[in-house]
Length: 537
Image (tube, rainbow, N blue to C red):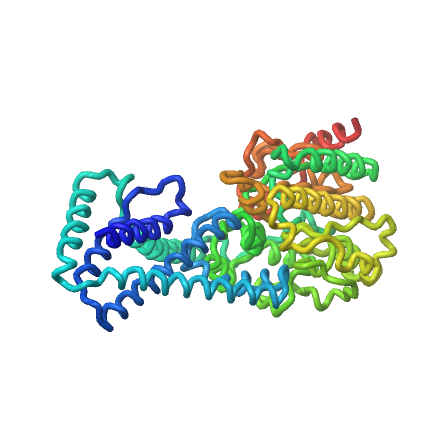
C-alpha cells in the first residue's frame, strides 16, 4: 500500500504539471491519476500490462512535450499553444534555431529533448507497471483509489480536482474546431467584401515615393516601460531634433499589431490588406484570395512596387502572390559583409543599399516595403552606426565586427541583460533610420517607420499592450496633415517623435482604409498650417 500511495502521489503530480502554463490555476488532484492507478493495481504482471504501461507513458511524454511547447509559445508569442496553427510554422522555428545557435548546438538541443522525453515515457511506464500485482492483491488498492475518486468528484470543487490530461487534449481539439470555423468565416468575409478585386488609385500620392520601413520588435514598451525608456526616450528626442534640422516634418502615433514576439509577416499582411490577419491560416487564405492590398493600389497609381527583405534566405512565393514588381532578399542585395547571428546584414547596409541600388535607379515614383532586422532577437552584437554612410559600400566595412560580442546562448541565460540588449538594438535601429531620413527624405517622400510587433513577453512581461510605435516623416506638410485630421481613421497621432502613451492605437488593419480615404483628396489648408506652425516653433 505504501508503494501504491507513493506512485499515486507521483503520478498525480506529473499530471498536474501539465497545467503549469495556466499557473496559478492548478488544482490539487488529477482525476486521471486515481483512475489509471486503480486500473493498473488490478492487473497482473504480463506482457499486456507492460505494453499498456508503455502506451500510457508515451502519451504522457507527448502531453508533456505539448506543455513545454505551450510555455515557450506563451513566452515568445504572447498566446497559448494552438497545434492547428503551430504545425504550420515548425519550419520557421527550426530556421530560427539554426540561425541563432548554429547547426551543431541546435541538433544537440533537439537530441537532448528527444532523449529527455523518451526517458520520461520509459520512467512513467515503469512506475505504472510496478503497480500490477494480481487481482487479489490489487483489489483493496483499486477500491481505495476509486473511493478517493468518487469523493473528489462528488464533493471537491473544480479548483481542487480536475481532468488535467483530458482537459489539455480537449482544449486543443476545441481550438482546432474554433480556428477552422474562424478561418472559414474570414474566407467568406473576403469573398463578400465589396472592395474585393477593386484596387484604388491614390492620386494624392501620384508623384511621391512611399516607403514603409518595418522596424523589427519596435513596440510601445520600448518607450512606455521604465526598463527601456531611459534609452529610447532620449533617442526619440534626438530623432525629432535631427528631422527638424533637416527641414522635415514628423508625426507619431500607435497601431495595434495582430501578433507579439514573432510572425512579422502577419503584421505586414494586416497593414497592407486592411484585414486583421492574426493566424497563418488567415494569411494563406488572403494570399489565395487575390484580395487587393496597398501594393495593388500603389501600382494602380503608377508606382513601381518593391519589397526589400534582407531576412529572406530562401524562395519566397508569398511575395510573388502579393504582386510586387520586384523583390530583393538576402542573396540579391550584394552584401559582402558578415552575418550577425540571425541578422543577415545590418540595417545601415539595408538602408544604404536600398537608396543606392533601388531608389536612385527607379524612374518615377515607387512604393517600397523595407523589412529591417537589426533589432531582431537575439540582439547581439550591437553594432555602431558608421558616421560616413559612403563607407558602407558592399558591407565589407562591417568585417571588423565579425564574431564580436558574446554568443546568444550566453546572453540569454540572463533575462535582464537580454532586455538591456533589446533596448540597445532598438536604439541602433532608430539611429540608423534617422540617418536615412535626414539624408534622403524630401518633399516628394512619405516615409513611414513602424514596428511590426512588440518583443516577446519574456522581454515586456505578461499583459503588455500589443501596440507598436509609428513615425511618419516628409518634407511636405500636406502629406502629414491627414494623420492629424479629426476623424481620419487613425486617431492619436501627434506632432513630433513621441506617440501618446495614454491612448491605445487603432488596429494595423486601419492603415489601408485610412490611405484610401485620405489620399484621394487634398488636405485641408488648416491641417497643413497646423503641421507647419508647430514644427516651426
